[in-house]
Length: 251
Length: 166
Image (cartoon, rainbow over all chains, first blue to last red):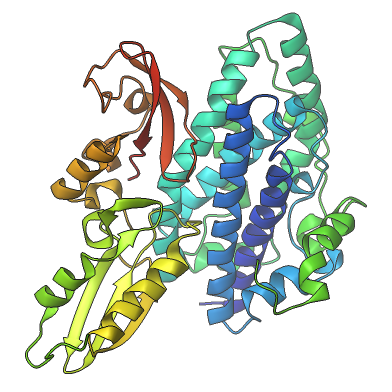
């Protein structure tokens, strides 16, 4: 097994989940209705927990302990896709991001249930079941609001158009694509993107929303290599504030 | 209270662990919840393997400590590890555990969670109070990661379900 290849995969997944988990947690107390406040807070808790499980696998492979990895790196050392770090903006934006990201994430974990690296395959078997609730939540709201009023449809469409180039950045190829595929670790970003597009299309089909033509969109890439938007570093500063004051603090 | 530990076996350890409850659902023991996946006894040493209901479950550390504490009090030398070797599913909750959930006011999860693939499994969950099925899903997320929120049209009250996960 190529250790560098599996580490690259684990880091980008863990960083996606930690950063989007943090963004989701920013809805706590701010949700447009109580149920959505609870939903985004619960998904935040799931995602941060899943990122911890991935950082623990990395620790077993010789990386630093999870807290050090999560709280002491700078933006340039994070491998999350840029879509996860964008500020929450309005609810429609967060909802569309949740839909685009979680559809991809659920498919990725599904593919990893067959990963040749057993600890990741075992974790994937567990996480896959949990993610059904995330995709169920996203699909329910996209279908409802995507066919409701002129305002809800136009808001979602606007966010969909804005987010598609960033969503495509989730599938930025790894330098290890060939190794991952050859070693039976992961079937690769291209296969994932294809399955994701089919899944997105089938949810949007019964709504009034139009899927932008992905062939005409330039993906926003760079996140996997540590090239981020100006929004990531302030998020990290806030997230690590307590840790940096007192690394031994319990809260 | 240190017990005579000569000749204790896995069965005894599991009986003792009945005393450790889920901190968020104090009527449900960890054994009945199905999160204790392996127990291996060798003289004074006992190795316990646990697995979380949800990967992000914040109660895991406390449960781990309580298991270790109880077994230490019994005079054993426990090691408690968290593993995903045998992942938790809601089918791991025992019948006794499901009855305890219902008595606590939480709808127990239906069986065969792994076979459930669409959202119908969350609609028409039987109400734990009146057993009626004229209910609807209000939110797939609830006050803890393992609960969803439903509404019973017969009782005209909200209730929670322990989520099926497969």
